[in-house]
Image 1 (cartoon, rainbow, N blue to C red):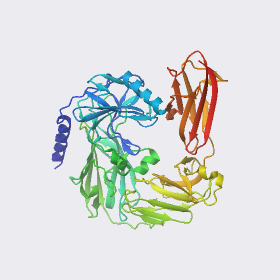
Image 2 (cartoon, rainbow, N blue to C red):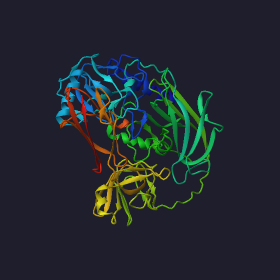
Image 3 (tube, rainbow, N blue to C red):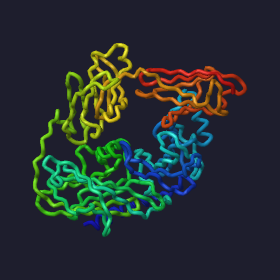
Length: 565
């Protein structure tokens, strides 16, 4: 049976590689060494493309992988930064992100639109064939724009009709991979109220070691457990000649040679990416940045990556027998690694009953209310049923309400919860400045989740549970001029400012020189805005500059100066 499934997946892989009969050119003319691959676990999503290393440099030419026309040009301080989308006649769209700049014709068009709309961030949709390219034409230069953590090219291939990203490694790019995935840890989860592992109702973590052709739990190969148990594996993949940690492609979970679950990451949908928070061990990810794939499917998880899902991947260890467990992990080139151990079905243990405020069901709307707080979750906001936790605490220093424990930050939400906290005694002058913030008990740090005052309450919508309270943001953003010293311009061809806000966050900024709006590019990861001198600034004269920065609670800071250029 196992041989059949392995053969099936090889046939499936072969069809993905060859059925489209496409032969894309590489997007860059340097060795394709990856810093990240398709399907890798990221925050709230799977990675939708591949990250190509650029030797820590920007400005490397990017080429069209096939004939096509530009369908979208995006400029953003976040996310993909400067991005280019090209539609090809073979049914695919290629995406190039974190670019430094576009080719000259596109760059000039984008800049005109930015001045026309008086906005750095834009989404532009050129007319079909306004910007045509042939296979191998230079279209842009690699960069570090948007939320990029370092210079590289983020590259995607999408199905044009659905805009679903597909795995670029299924095409004929010259990326060598003969290295097997590496598995580091195993989690075992008692899933139901009657389940346990080694007499514990809590999940247990085990280190793995490799010998005799498989990964095995260190020091022990058989565990006693009872009831429905789930498993989680912390696995990564390496490509040849590269120590960057990449994600796995496929996983199979077998009990006694019976396939219970398998998933394979060939194609993704942006509309259901957030279900990744159910697929992974979300708590472990928040606590330790670990990336565990679970071998079972929670009832609210609607990801489409699963090929096989017998009993949602849950096996009942209740017959007193020893059962062989195997988890097989593949990369895109079908290099495989295997985990082996056994579960001896034991006897049930009595669980300690926990005091909870309410039972929340994943497939219904849930509501909880006290005199101080109201919490509303829409239907399907949860991935599984939870025992809701609530506690009212003391008022933290600087807060305008008590601290409320709204469940815990280790439980993910698929849809936002509506939180309303009583603010009946909030001074009138602070109402417009009020918001709800998460409070970190260990560091005493506050992080805004937004909110508005209305009718004696502060309301917000949030994807996060946690400890929260009302605070007011009355402090204007901070402006630090980097190009001026004692009123004198210190840089020859540019002007830069550092702009920051401590609580609600920066909402907007505008820069005027001699009364005219000037385009300053925004790089939030460096808290930087920057203007490189161009035709919009006349040389050989004195100029007046005014910068206005506004946060999300309408606090404003202004910087004004004169300079000669």
